[in-house]
Image 1: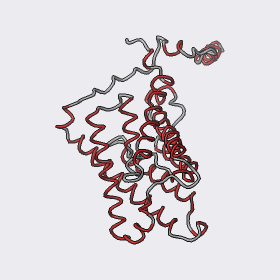
Image 2: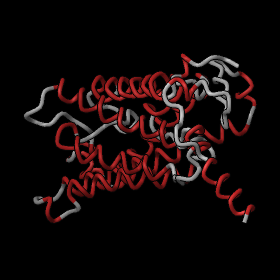
Image 3: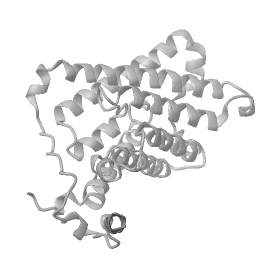
Image 4: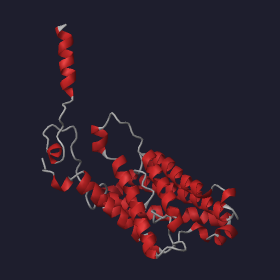
Length: 277
């Protein structure tokens, strides 16, 4: 009987009723997680590693496939006289979100599954990867996007040219400022989701809440497309928007990614305010 009472007492006190919050929680001595060191700005050693180039190739292939599927979907909707006869806006959103889910799942263990220069830029600002790797990823992503669009144009040239290649544009009734704002907010949602879904500290402390990172990332892409397709067609990925109103569809996502990185690092994780052990 005493043994049972001891078990009950230990079980009741295993998780204390009052948990430290805010800065108290961040400064608690008992930690089950230590902050990883920031990635160096330049890491020359990477250039001699095959895994570095393999990761770049994975980003190229993933972005190639992403553009191939997404452009074909957009063109299929645009060529129809009635969107009711096609998958419509919801289908386009599912195409983008579903492909991101699948491709992030396939490449996360190789390159991190960025498939988006804005995501790479945000992670670089948070010091999750070096400038060397960030520039290489962005170059491979843009090259993959060009090749993916080129393949579609190659075997469906008439439809491709007639629909503008599925390029993004600010729709009638909206200003360029509206489009820029939509791209900033949409990219913020995406990159913030990436940070939250891949946060190692969250995985360590919330291990009782299993999470498949590609799922919320893909779902975020889906939801952002539902909201912003009527405004800009939804960019939130500079590689996707190559050649179309570059200042909106590149500047907007990069600003959104930067804001998400600052919010995650400064507000959510409070890394600048933590004492270095």
